[in-house]
Amino acid sequence: MKGCVRIASGQGFWGDLLSAPRDQVRRGPIDYLVMDYLAEVTMSILQKQKRKDPSLGYARDLVPLMDELLPLLVEKGIRVITNGGGVNPAACRDAIFASAARHGIRGLAIGVVTGDDILPRLRDIRSQGAPLANMETGEDLSGVMDRVLSANVYFGAAPIVRALREGAQIVITGRTTDTGLTLAPMMFEFGWRETDWDLLAAGTIAGHILECGAQSSGGNFSADWRSVPDLAHVGFPIAEATAGGDVVITKHEGSGGLVSVQTVKEQLLYEIGNPAEYITPDCIADFTTIRLDAEGPDRVRVSGVRGRPATTSYKVSMSYLDGYTAIGTLTYAWPDALDKARAADGILRRRLSDLGLAFEEIRTEFVGYDSCHGPLAVAPDEINEVVLRIGVRGKEMDAVERFGREIAPLILTGPPSVTGFAGGRPRPSEVIAYWPALIPRTAVTPEVAVRTT
Amino acid sequence: MKIRLLDIAHARSGDKGDTANVGVIARRDEYYPLLAKYLTAERVRAHFAGLVLGRVERYELPNLGALNFLLHEALGGGGTRSLKNDAQGKTLASAMLRMELDIDDNDSPGRERHV
Image 1 (cartoon, each protein chain N blue to C red):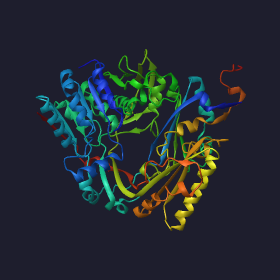
Image 2 (cartoon, helix red, strand yellow):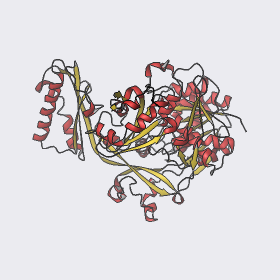
Image 3 (cartoon, each protein chain N blue to C red):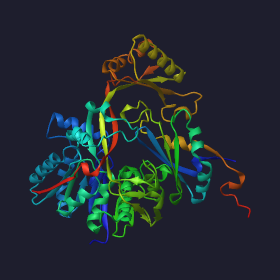
Image 4 (tube, rainbow over the protein chains, first blue to last red):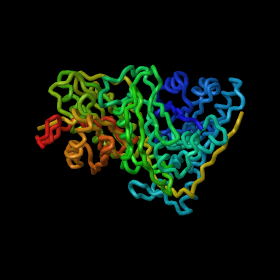
C-alpha cells in the first residue's frame, strides 16, 4: 500500500481550462487525474447527440485530450477517472482505444461504468413501484413523462473501485457523483471498505474540494482576490490522501494560484445544503466535523471528518423539455442612459402586448446597474452606458421567436444613442427543466466492464 | 456601531435548482460569534427582500467559522428556465456582503472586553 496517493483535479466542468489536465500530468508527480464533465443539463444534450448519431453521447473533448496525453500517462502509470462518458461511455472508450492504436500503445485497460441511464426503462421502473416523484415539489412524474429527455441515476465510488481492481488504467463512467471520482482511488489504494463511514466521508469531502477545479486553488476567491498570484497559470488542486483519512490539499510547485485555509473554506461552502448531512451514494458526510490547518505554503490539511451510513436510495436526475426562452440586449449611452433603456423597455412591452403575444414571464434587467443584485443595487447618479437585457419565456416557440424580431426595430424606432445589436436576432432556446427524484438501490445495478487493447 | 459584513466576512454562492446557497465565512476566528449572533435568517431575508421570494434557512459551521444560508425561490426558476443574467446566483455572495450589521458596543470587534 502506498503511503500517500496524489489525486489531481483536471477539469471542474465541461468547458474548463483546457491546459489544466496537461499541466497536472506534466508539471509534477500525480497518481490519478480526475475529471468532472457532467452538469445537470449536459445529459440531455448528450442524449440528443446520441439520438442523431449512436457513436456519440459523451464529452468529445476527452478524446483529443487523451490522444495527446496517452503516451505520458502510460509512461508514468497515471490513472484517469472521469464521468465524461455521458450517456455513451463505451463509445468514448472505443474512441480512446483507436487513439491508443495510433500511438502503438498495447495492453491499455479501460473500464466502463454503465447502468445509470434508465431512460429506456422508465415505464418499467415506475410500474415496478418506484414512482420517481419530484423530490423537491412532490409532483407526480406522469405530467412530464412524455417530455423526458434524459434520466440518470447518480452512482458513487463503488463501481469505479471495481474497475480499478480489475486493472483499469482509465475509468470512464456515465452519471457518477463528482465526489465519487476522487473517493474511488482512495478506497482502492487503501482498501477502505464500503462501511468505513468516517473514511468514506473524508474522501468525499476531498472530492468536494476538488470537484470545481481551481475554485479551491485561487479562482473566484472572494476574501482577497488581488492577493492571488499568477492566475494566468493557475494550478488546479491536488489531494494528497493517506490511509487514515487525512488529506492535504495542495497544487504543483511553480504553478499560479493559491491554496490557503480561506480558499479551501470557500470551496467547502460551495453548493451545499445542510452541512451536517451531505448525502452521496457512498455515505453521509458531516461538514461540521472538518478541521482545517495551514501546513506550509499552498498546503492545507483536512482532518477530523466524520461520516454516517449511506441512505437506501440513489438520486435520479431527469430532464424534460419545458418551453422556450429568448434574450435580447441593446446598449444605451450617456446622457440619460438608464432612462432611455427604461423607455425602450416600455415601448417593447407595449408592442408585445399589441401583438397579443403571451409569455410565462418577461424579465427586464439593466446590465451595469441591477442585473446581479436586483433591488439591492444602489441607484447610480449618472452612468456612462447601460445594457438593456430583456428576456421572455413561453410554451410556444412561435411567440418566443416573434419576440426576437422586435429587438432590432428599437434601434430606429426608439430612444437615441443606442447600439450593440451585432449578434443578430435572439433565437429561441429550449428550456431543459430538471426533475430530481429518488429510486431504491435495488431497482438499478451498476455495470462494470474492463477491456484491454 | 455599524459594521459592513464585507469587512468581517468573505462568501461564496451557488445554485441548486431555484435555491441559492450563500456560505459566509468570518475573516478572523474572533468575528464568528458576531456572525452567529447578528447574521440571523430573519436579517438575511429582510436584506434580500424583492430578490429572494421564498424562505431563508441558516446552518452553522463553527468549525469553519462559517454560516451557510439557503435562499429559496431566488433564481427566477433556476437552470435554463431562468431569464436572469445571474441565473446561477454566482453574485449573491457579494450581494450578501453589502449588508451592514448593527453591533452592540460590547460586541465590537477589536475592543477590549470589560471583565
